[in-house]
Image (cartoon, rainbow, N blue to C red; front, top):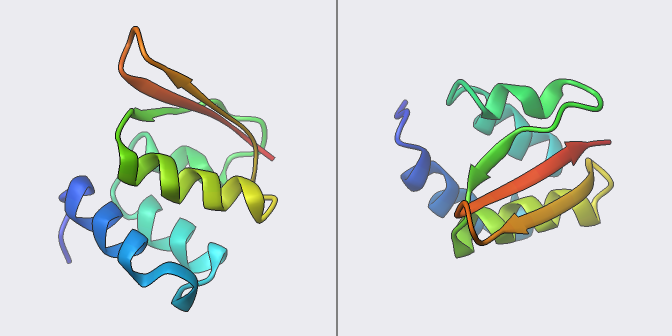
Length: 83
């Protein structure tokens, strides 16, 4: 198992709908902080503001796992709120 977040997010993105939202969260939480916060209701972690994170986090929002996804260009971060 790798803890290279960029690689893991890339692979999750490439899998698309072949992996469920629950599986996405399970894989991401193995990366440690801030990904472990994806299992904490109402938590507001921040992630790198890049295309792959945006696609994976947007998918989790569309599936009801996140209530909010906000890109922060000035800080180069994406903030989310766990549903």
